[in-house]
Length: 323
Ligand SMILES: [Zn+2]
Image (tube, rainbow, N blue to C red; front, side, top):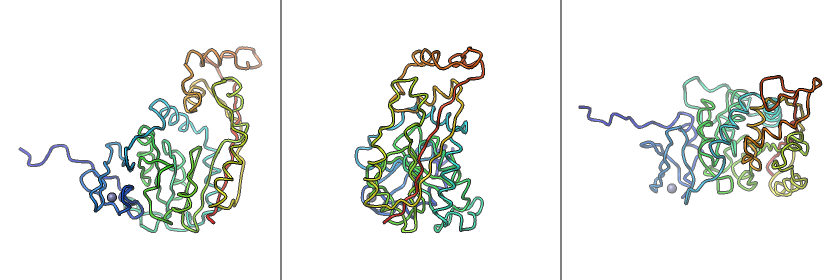
């Protein structure tokens, strides 16, 4: 008989243990160590490692909301089609131009733990980890950390990249991170907490904020009333919120036409908080009324023919320097 349990406890992913230098206990602020499938502090606060490879660093009740299963799967499916790859490229360009330390160091040795001096990318509200993984591909010396409230999304994010670790955490709570530890803080279509963003960024670090512009997905919103339009005052509120902590360095607009097939339309709708409860039958009915192509035979809802339907992707990307 074996003397030890047959099921060997999983250990923390190397990417996660490689980030323990900047992670802190969300309950007391002490440093964390890995032990028995959990991260623990000296004051005996324990944070379990999920089998999927992320750690829960929610203090207090641990109640979370965020993307549900259907929403997380739709987001993962949609992003892996490359529909937003021009956006990822533009984010990478802006990061490369404003955070030179990302590209300044030699790559992390294959199979080895990231050096503690490796430049660090933090993705707030990382979803399935698409942007974080894409930036780590582009910056081979960097290590990545993402957090989200959605356990479903974190399952995808935990395996998105070998140099990325993820934890479940709330953007509106204090971040379980040391001061001045992040080189690039990414916020893509996610909520923001400017004060915590400023605290965890190094003085040389940069915040990159990505949000929809007014005409983003306008054609789809015309079709589907449940998709709420972009609040015209959103931009003003963003700058008011960031202004006490950050200066704007640079701003870009990414705008292109995106062809959509029926599955991508359904995923886009399912990804949208205001519209994710639109029933499939209702959606098919709405799509059947979509603009037809020159031959007059719209097959949008049927999915068997080339789809003559494009939406405008229009997104603002800005880089900010801590004051
Ligand atoms: Zn603690």
